[in-house]
Image 1 (cartoon, helix red, strand yellow):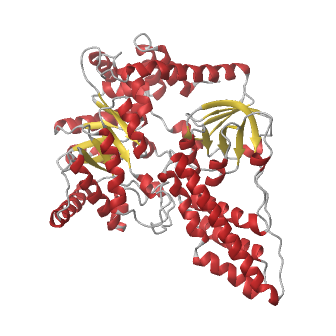
Image 2: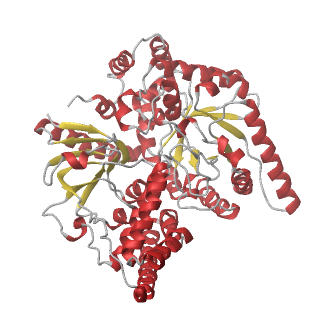
Length: 592
């Protein structure tokens, strides 16, 4: 049996192949000085190397824009700004003029100072900044000392490989040859890092946050990489390889079979219709939602608008992005979630905040008070977009009625401004995310001040169980079937139902076969998941009947363990659901 290593799923897909441990060239530069009369030469060398690095970065940006789109291309904007950063540039020049250091030594020392300051900040956004800085350093030194490129790009293996590295910078990710790299596994990283975003856009299976994997494997060691579950298996047994291969084949066959379901209605066997909506990360995802005949967009994440940004996104840019989605999806509704920043999503324009636990700090709606223009710009853009189709506003991390009232005031102010300016705009229902225990507990109170709810199971589990969902080592404790979750969901459904407020579940549970069955049994009538998951959920819904799953969920509310809940679900639904659905879900607990 192989050695399993749990990481963070960054880009889906299952691949099997030999490991190739990337040995990036060391960026250490020996101490060297020049005579005073050579200072001007070193300054010129530095400026020339910086300009060449900017040109190469612009070329990469253009390549990414042509392949993947303008959103992904913006990932390289911070690197361009670093190359013109006065502190970085002037600090390097000072080392040259005052200490008579060579250009490469002066630049390396200044970069080292930057890196040390950022790592001391212990902030969630540091990893992306350090990765960008590493890219910039390598690009400048490539000119100054003829730095060699990474061996994965210049020494192709004999066969396609799974690339293993300590980290992968954005430029190295986009330069990978898709025919030679089956997947990527890195020691560090988060799902929201620039490299992870690019991996998903490029369709490269990727697992990050694997600890010391690059020290544990050698070139040629066979591995399985499961980007869906965030798992790597080192030296897998034949049975494990067959099992993962079969699951991959079944998944592909299931996708082909489910294509025929796209036009069918998500109606249970006894005639109850379940709303099926799409979660979108980028405007381009809207076409996928329409292709599977989603009822609309249940969650349009807007954080893509701040990727690579050093300033608050302007209103027009946001309006155009929202219009692109509405032009595709309307007349079906689009639910736009306002910026859910903080935690592991901290753009460069936000002031640095020292936080021991960013997920319990400045997150979601709390950021809006720190930077009012951030929320104000977005509300204006959303109201303008609402003139072109049905739009709903969804606010994250709300815990109190006072926060809802503050949001209402901003919406009213923005509406009055647009009226005075004669700018076309529309009305938007207001909803809040139920994703903390506090918001669920007072759902019936919040419901008096909002028009709808969206239940986010991912964060609710995180806060309910005190488990950091970005920590790969804690993944066994991130329990979708914990008895407490069922009871929280029932409270939320009852709270929403008392006031007649629609409730949609948009977290991971909505895309999980057993989880969705539980949700429907607990009274949820709207689910929102990735467009790719909608056909499977349609097939699931059409195989259920409400009376049975409601009785089943009622029985499970008294269960004492998640294992009991899961086993009872599988046993009860085994004869009713497609085996392929249950088999795919069962992979979560496959013992290997």
